Image (cartoon, rainbow, N blue to C red):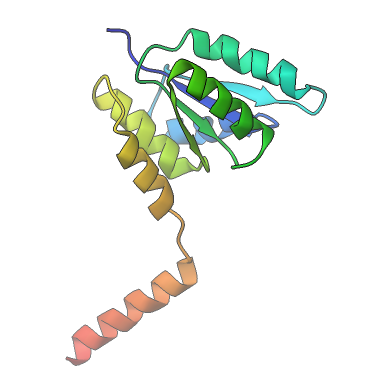
Length: 142
């Protein structure tokens, strides 16, 4: 069975910059590619590029898009339905790391785990630190 792939669909191509940061954390990943949306590209042109990239993706692959409702997600959704490829919107570093680790550790992606990681990685830092300090103070006084 061929290893699943991850396809990034982002405005301006920032997905590959994000991937460079991810590589600093987990090392090389050869199963991620991107189809960047550039300002001069029409929706139909972009859709054709995404279809071409998805044609080479084996079963169990994943499309990650930058923002719901945007051209990248709309194209990803159409191609995902056509090719039976899972599509997750809201690309961030923890989500991409989780997806890459899933493939680095095996030959499949636990889509629910990737989605959960992306959702739980959004944190109000000041609130989190303040709560942690309050809990430590309560432990020390209790």
